[in-house]
Length: 130
Image (cartoon, rainbow, N blue to C red; front, side, top):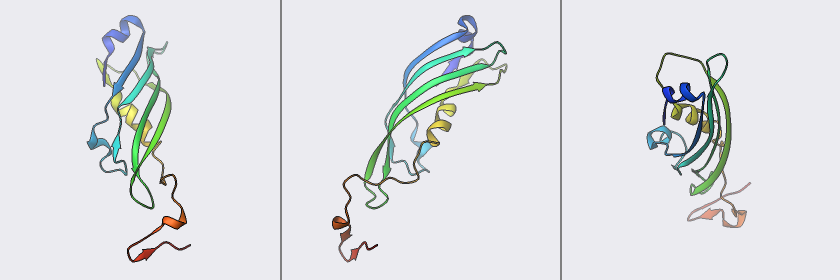
């Protein structure tokens, strides 16, 4: 998701309302199994110091393995981003890296599939005991 700063410098503000697909190579080394397209809404603006203010909301779902069964568990998230990107001579800004940095912070350490009970925590030759 590259933003052309020439459009931003003319209007001083740009509205964002897009769906962004996070490439699998971003999350394949994490515990994320799959990600839905991320709904990105908000604005980019140039402030009085000629810096780029990024005010966005990200909404999406990532699938993570259950800590007990390893089955995929959907984890819904909504992230508010309010950052300032220093001014530079670049003509575009790659927002995907900014989005990804904030998404990584929302990945939980572990998830447990709803409905898991001790009664069904056994299998062929094993049983979970506390």
